[in-house]
Image (cartoon, rainbow, N blue to C red; front, side, top):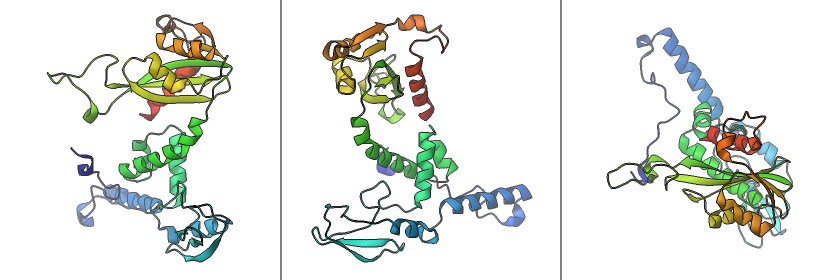
Length: 285
């Protein structure tokens, strides 16, 4: 099925919509009413909130499109948001232009609540159901959030006493590669996306997906090489792909046999910190 053919069920409806009240019992009527009230709270019109008043209270000194200081006020939008005009690029913009809130249709409070849920390791499916938003809306917001965080993640450096490991996630069913007989490949196959992860004693974490299957030195270096401080102490298992990091970054290392760590409790496991990072990944999927 092509992406533009995917259909999702509206969060607005209940199984009892359109059914006459005399054909429903009291509990069904109660559920329908409460559901619709909850939906309306999360889908209030922007013009019905104090959002415009709040955003208009901030001073704007430069154009969000070209950076020019030669700007002037130019009326209001339908949502009563102050509109500005740049004398240099000759374009209109508002305070949210070029931000994660650009062209938003739901109140900013809804997107903030979504961010809180995501940062609390809630899945997009769960937040979609809780806030009565379609899954496509939640995925769209998540993509915007990732774009916002990309520049931040590019600057992350772990240093001092660090831990390195890989974790994997299975591709979606429609992306799986199969044998001629239609069976899935087993083990760390081309259907398992490899995530290279590093963290340090200060709680800084960097993770990057880079290719499928068993890690290689080339892909390990591409993922982590510019995010580890030279001379750090690296704690890791016996994965051979990590050798490139030790060699190129002059790292000290402490190596453990992963198969022997399986019987250790979390408190005694020397790689517990990075294991907990990977556990958070599992809660998001």
